[in-house]
Length: 325
Image (cartoon, rainbow, N blue to C red; front, side, top):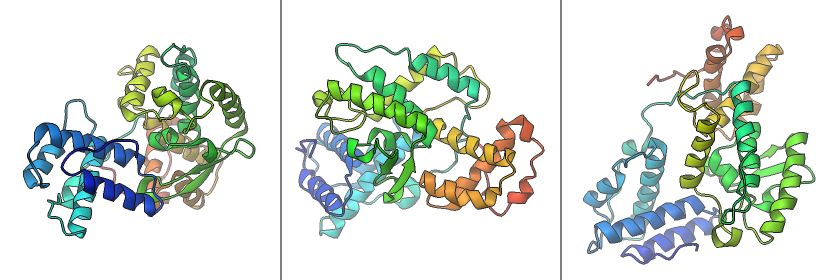
């Protein structure tokens, strides 16, 4: 394990992690959240020996500057821990499922090609430092892969060298959302970029465990969400995009939304049968339900004026209701 668990619930936390890994899940992000919970319990409830309702509700409180999605992830992992403990005969409060679900869908910012060009120009000017000798290489390639392959940010962060076949361009996405595995393919230009990147970063961190190694533990760790989100926001600000572009405030995850919307727009522009193509896009992006992918059809006429006369009723059976904030 990457962390030392020392609190009252350490045996159960370790048991849950071992169980998940026995089932084939790497459980890296959840392990990190469990370490946060272990520290939280020692600091806030040092004498507590049971996961009580009061403790869980305190853990579930939204924190300053915390995005709702990360809070839900925090809560879901501890709900899983409580279920595991109950399963082995240890009483623990299980937060109701209703409190771990998203109540509204964020309307994403879809980047224009001009915005993407401005953003990557800034990213490519990033410089190395003594403490982060490979950061400039990592950000240039990681953010491009997220956009060009429509990856979730955590999927890019968790890639290992053996997951990226630099001969064929085949990328394995393992234990993603919903514990699903899938394969995506790199385009020729991105594949060549990854080959050059891998050679350079391999000289800096020859024994790296992750395709995008962080400076921690001499390159054996992966970049955290707490690092990648503010780093991307800094690039947005430098590019003049943060709070200064049309539509909703841009986020890193919106690169994935932009990939899907651009792909659908291109199919519509080419006169392709979008309903037929949608299943392929859904599988490629790792969506559980086809309706999750069909949602992006709403965004095409909204973000591409030339498609303003698109007849959405042609796709009405595929499109879920959009919940506006």
